[in-house]
Image 1 (cartoon, rainbow, N blue to C red):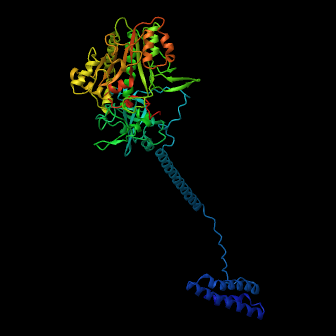
Image 2: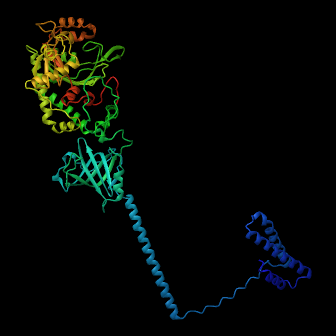
Image 3: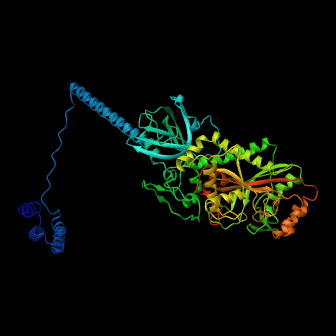
Length: 628
């Protein structure tokens, strides 16, 4: 502004020559004052003074500029330069016009080419991003919920059917996603169905996008998946899978049902071999925590397994245990059907304890006292001896309200019962039992080879040794064997669990068998319906069968005379009203008969050398557990 003062004054004189002398003098004074304020503002800014100090001078300057326009009729400032008139362009010649048009066309074509190249780059980048993210790809992802809406032509191949002979074939398998291992641009998975597992391999390729590999790698373990691909033979066996000689090169992978919450334990931990052999005697504490073996690896505790039984049952060992148990049921029926037995189904709601005693679950039955059956005993006797069926058997639940927290007791177990008429001697029944058990043991060994080995992998055990025919000793002979080993045992006292196991060890060493039965038990330790021994009133025509020193069957010849039944019931203190219909069933002619009841879970536990009956019960019911 200061530098412009002479020009401003000169402009003032030029523009205002026609003004009066008074106006001229006033305009000059305004111009000088504006210049002075300009210098003051410039200096303040140079000294970086706050705006508050020079703001008044600025406002005064602006006011003076407005006053100047009023006095002079012109805006304050140097005169504006006049624009030079634009020269008129001459029209291009014909030659130049053609040249310009060619240049414009070339430029347009060049810009169009750049545009197309840019669009092509953008398209390739977009396709790459979409492929990386899996946009529009159908060979992987979550399946819609199966609601039985459609039936397709898909064929699923059971994992156990896969073999090297199928190399090159495309197969579809379904199972649990047991493990996932991502390595760079590939993923390895182990898919398990029932007892069997197979490895799948997925590599990034033209057909397999990075998104597919990422999808597989992020799926939660134990999800249900469909895996489709080509069967190949690996260079070396796949040790982590049951199907070691094949693997699947994955082309499609879909989640049928994802795991929705975190697993309470890892399946690898649940499948791990036992670190130590659990004791099978003494009190049992279900709250025992998971333990770590000498190898530093975790073993899942029994309580955790039972709390999440649906997961625990997926392990190969448990899959095998319960398939063997199922086979025992099949063999039991097969053998008895061949011997002309008829399967029966008896009530589990009864008016009194079936065998006397107080260990029953009581309930109110429409205002009448009732209980859950401790045994089908009374009804199987009725059907066999008094109803003309002669040979009957039943499989069903048995309830015992025993507050026993041991490794061998359950409050509900599966009973395999049979009852049959006899002609002369209850040895006829013992022969059937001997044949039955040998048939079952042989059947397990012949039909369940794979299952036995899967159990042995996690719970090592020795094969059961048994004789043909089954070893038979009397109760007195068993007591004598214990005394010979320095163990106190009276001939008329019941065997303790500890002494039963000791006797089992003695018999194994002496007779080379894990399976035997004892006959002629003291009458005082048997149920009221047991036939007394004709030679010794202190004994009875009763027997127990043992596996590895533990009882798995209890039976006897039954009393079929109503007067003797009443006598025996009174001796036990049983209310005759509770068994009135049972006694009456023998008043119209009843055949001599005998039988026994087998505890299925205990047979499985002992055949497989398991230390705890909870391992052979689907959903154990004990004093401390009633769920799941």
